[in-house]
Amino acid sequence: MKSRSAGGRFSIAITFTCCVVIGIDQFLTSRQTRATEPTQTNLDEQYTKIIHPLVAKYCLDCHSTKAKKGHLDLERFKSASDVRRDLEPWPALIEQIEAGEMPPKEKPQPSTGEKTQLVAWARDLLAAEAKPVWAIRGPCRCGD
Image (cartoon, rainbow, N blue to C red; front, top):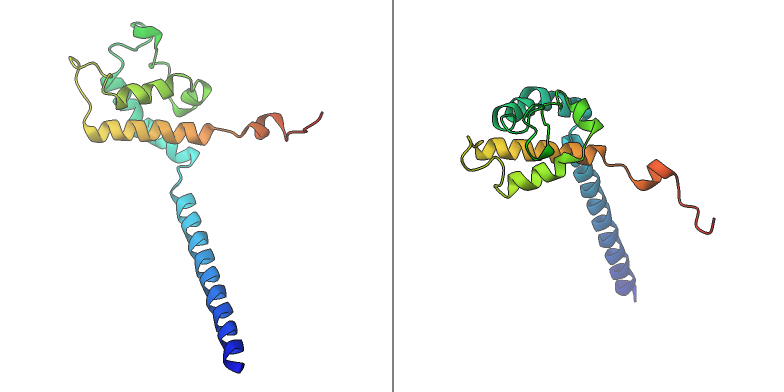
C-alpha cells in the first residue's frame, strides 16, 4: 500500500513540476514577444529612415499629390503620424505589393528586402493602431 501512495505522490509531483515549467516557458515566451513588438517610436523612426524614402523612390511617380493615379496620393504621408490619420489605403498597398502588382513591371522595382520592409512596417503599424471594439465603444451591456 505504501508504494501506491508514494507512486501517487510522485505522479502529482511530476505533474506539478511540468505545469510550473510550462508556465515559466509561457511567461518567458510572452515577454520575448512583447519585447520585439514595435513601439510607436520605432515605427515613426522606421517610417522616416526607411519607409518614406522607399515610397518616394518607387511610388511617387504615379501616386503623388499631382499624379494621383488610381486616386491614390501617397505623397501626403510625410510622417507616420500622417499615416495614422488615414490607414485606409495601407491594406490595399500591402496586398498589391505582395501580389507583385505594384510597382508596375515597367517601373523600377524594389528589392525583395525592400518589399519585405515596407510590408512588415505597414502590417506592424496597422496592428499597433487596431483597437478592440470595447476600447472604442466601451464594454458590451447585453440586454440593454
